[in-house]
Length: 284
Image (tube, rainbow, N blue to C red; front, top):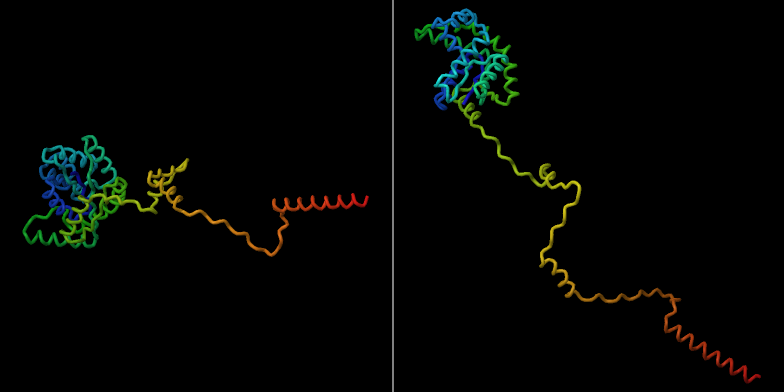
């Protein structure tokens, strides 16, 4: 697992990194710690960045990226790592992506700890007081004025960096002002979150409507079973024959001549003609 913890100095990145190290068995890579180690060891890089760190300014990208690249190739970083305090600018993020790609790996998540700057100033003052009470030596950049300058630099550089990782879809924001245990739980949920199960489309949902929609030709009707085909014939046999309808009485005589009437009329006409013929013969 390869992670980045984003947040201004005093946001609690170191505390959360230690908990992630214990849980996942990965190493914490703090660029600040690595640079301070280089300064204490008096290496060429350490001598180069000593004055930069004392002013609270950002170190050149090529120096930081080179230190990170050397560190992630060590055996203890083979299972993964947490980058604490790096990258701080979009160019650093681009350089980191390019460097990781050259080693065939990529980031799994970027966790942003959102905090209130005024509370951070109070925290650093409390930390300074506690360090002095324990009789420990203060770091050169561990003072309120330096913190203010670093907060300004962080605020100017971080907004584009957050947008950069949002576009990559790997950024999760966590409330860094919550209690330590609550912040830890929020980070654990972000790292172990599973995609929501797909819901089945309902009868009225667009997905189901589109699926049932036929384009170009009508859907063939389902074939009926033999029993269903025989059922109408059996019902027709049991159904009684329809009774003939009676003609409605209108009160008017029909002018239509039936066949029997035509025969009767023709018969009467023939008899009358015969009588007229016999009468004419007698007169002659």
